[in-house]
Image (cartoon, rainbow, N blue to C red; front, side, top):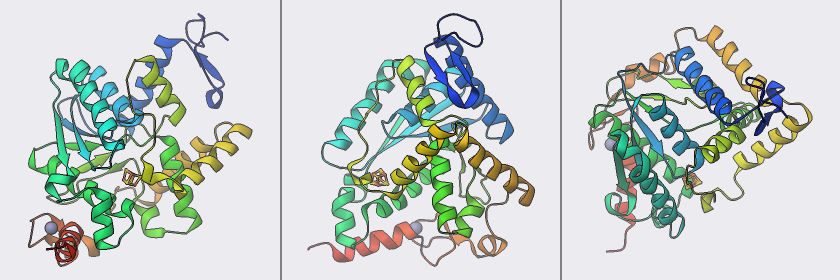
Length: 312
Ligand code: SF4
Ligand code: ZN
């Protein structure tokens, strides 16, 4: 197998492009895909300050690495969920990457500790309010990332969602005809109102396998295990199904998601992801000041329930 660009020995084959690459050409290919995503979706410019949401996994650390390698000003935020074992291991990877690489490039690492700020680890908190762990986790992460981005004046918040994540999410939304989610699904979520950070997904043109190869070839030490709460999740099932389709017919994930984006761009040329009704009813949460369409924001509501249910 020879590299499609320089004809030396290839280290990775990409069936969806009917091509193979050597290490430097593959790294160049990955950077090019991310550069195209940033430009095409108008994610950010060279002077913008970016806050990367890192989990310790390959995708978010690879994203942080790429943005720094491409010369962007990228800091990171890690949310420590307080899951025994898993959180310690993933935090070590994030701190390790920061100490050995990112810090020398002037990048900062912010850490939010659920145990300290929300008063308990994510599992205990979910049990207290009788809610699924992943939904509690989603509310906390969305809230804390947005808060950090706004409070520290970042221009944009970036997450490590790759093509597999986005295609699996699209499959789930289509299977259940979640029209509201379909309308909002995309690689760029604009900062539609004051108090909401712009959110972007620069890895949406790279598959999970490509991101893993990128992390490996760049010597990034990441946590390989999945979060224990992900076991049995529908997203993992959708990914498996799409992987089977991809093996039979390379390029399926790409055409499924990219064609959805093309169609969405035609239907929503303004890129408006909030309904006019939502925009009209937005106001600051009376407890924390973050924008919300409900009376009190979902995070404050959840924390009030946890406080009321906590043993005295
Ligand atoms: Fe959070 Fe659930 Fe994902 Fe774990 S699997 S990080 S608990 S959303
Ligand atoms: Zn609030």
